[in-house]
Length: 335
Image 1 (tube, rainbow, N blue to C red):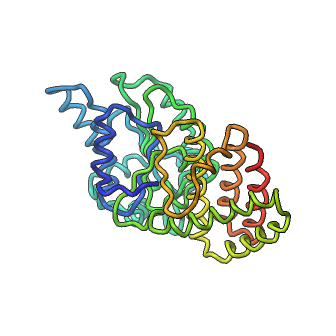
Image 2 (cartoon, rainbow, N blue to C red):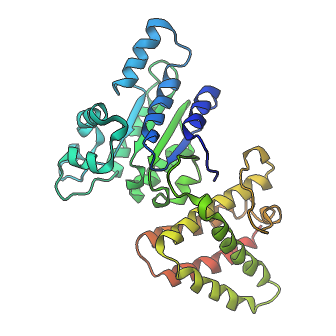
Image 3 (cartoon, rainbow, N blue to C red):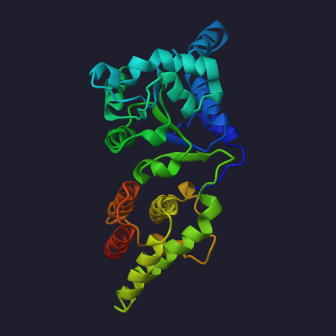
């Protein structure tokens, strides 16, 4: 995952390129994140238009009323089904964007919702209506865009629903996820997104050397155990050391490792133009990539996702790391 000096410019260049990814993840705590996302959507939805027609479409985007721009945001739970959907709160959402714009924060949104002690989240009831909305042809036969704000508040059921949509999007359909806490998203979702990092946030590059060393040590033990069973004790030692990390660093490790595995698979299938990973240590990425194939890519990423899931729910760290290490050792030899 690369850190981009000017994330806003990166997003603008994507919009202008007309090669729009299925899913984009904007991470970071910079105020420009939301504004850049809205500008990105406006550029795509007004592409090719001129004069009064373009002005009309721009105004629709700026008033958050364009029919091909859908917003998903955290809302409080309710016993009333109609109140468990974003549509019920859409007027408040438009008011919040109009009043606060890029200054909108989660705390300000919660205050706007006036939901007492309830913590808003993005549940499956907010996501399910998208299936029907995205089936409908685009208003101007252009793009359809779904913008998720506060994506770190997606629960697991909603995330699984979204994964299916991201993996099999309709024609000219894109998803934009905005979050300040990428580590709280399931790795399977992160790995399917083109990630753009906004400045001002500690991201994986700042700790990538430590994570890379940790990952390469696990791999070294996993490969050596086939030749020397004594490396089984080294795998257990690694698991205990990894379990002593704080949970935030553990989550960093799971996400980072999932990305390396995905990058290794891309290199293996000779999709070199899509490979952005560059080792910062003596880790032999080229050799490792030969072991990530169609036979084990899904199993490898699933094991890291499960470890992330159990860590997020405060599972026993030693058991999680030991289970991960043993299952990765088995999977890596299935190439």
